[in-house]
Length: 398
Image (tube, rainbow, N blue to C red; front, top):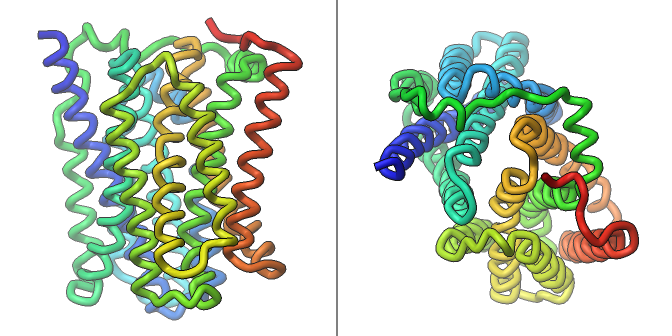
């Protein structure tokens, strides 16, 4: 009976998260399309997106503190309200000047809604599940996220030309569903699982700095998040030099996302919580080795094989990283550590494309991806060396 109740609560939480994520990503696509159609320059669009990512990164730790006090339902409903406001701002663009201001505010609201909703679903998932069930839940979350990465651009791309004026309003109404989904934690017996007293931020940072396994899990998760974001940009840019058509690029990116989805399904079927760290290292090593093969991959089919193997290897890093946080961090420190993880995700998405733009002035896209693979392998080697030399048993784990 208890398991059935937990699954029902998780389903409510999952439904709310999916509504917010799909509405938010679709609204961001609409924002970009409307800004471009209103003659906003590419540099201004980039600045708008960067501004939202910075604000999202800065509030990530604070969102964890809000969760500890108010629980997941308040965060999700706040996120839904933010998306409704963003949709209202995007409903009309009278002039180019107001377009920039409204688009900036709308994008900030969208990014903040992502942070609040992700904090709610990750924290609640880690709280109500344990062991293998937690790994399964995080794997399924990541698999669904991969599906949304494909559906949102496709859906907006098809509907934008047909329903230009009403699309943002429709997405705002869709986001309102998050306000009416029943509370994820209606029963008092689940509040102790979902909410806990926080330690001070400084104490949690000190705990994190003394735990090699937590540091490794967080840095691996944020780093791979940045790499996956970079790959989806590098492949279209490098397409002319690789003699790839637009259709080929679409197939490669779809195969990359599909491989992540399949890998997460495999992980949910074989959770084995005692092997989290071993699997994290193996996935990083395999992904790094195969990424170095990009330089030698010639033609569409060889790139397709490389993309699918890399997607499968790196796709499991995120659920493994989140599972490590909840398995090894103290309950009072989880909020800040998850917040730091989400903050690094946002900063990584800002820095990675910038570094990529500089690097591609000096090397080809395939060579750049190969160097990323080498960087992954070097990072894993350094982490193993530090663990062996300084402390064979990770500290800071209670």
